[in-house]
Length: 160
Image 1 (cartoon, one colour):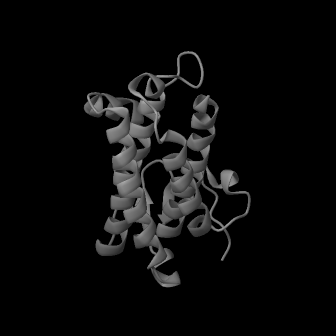
Image 2: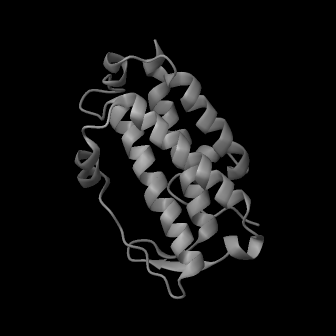
């Protein structure tokens, strides 16, 4: 099966997304273990999201993209609804850093189990997206796995 080309596939470096996802989930858990509230408010670059906001964003994407894949599998002719990540962040602004990590880890592990249980035919299930055109459930898997790595790289410099 050829890897679908998502905006984040390059972060997988040719690796299987089902192998990368547990590594990135565990890396985020290890990286943020013991962080205090101040550490979660550090930014990886001037004018960018804080670590807490990145973690909230990752948890929100786990909810949205995991639901998108499930809807594609259960709804004939499914058309995904796009969302604006910058408009979503304020909805969970009161969520603390530790709670954001917990939400991310729980939803990411649930999604990993979901994707690992899919057959090749299920992963090939197509759906429409207004901005990206025809996609597959496999595309969502590659998107999510690469997205983890992309944001893990933003968080790693904040461990010091």
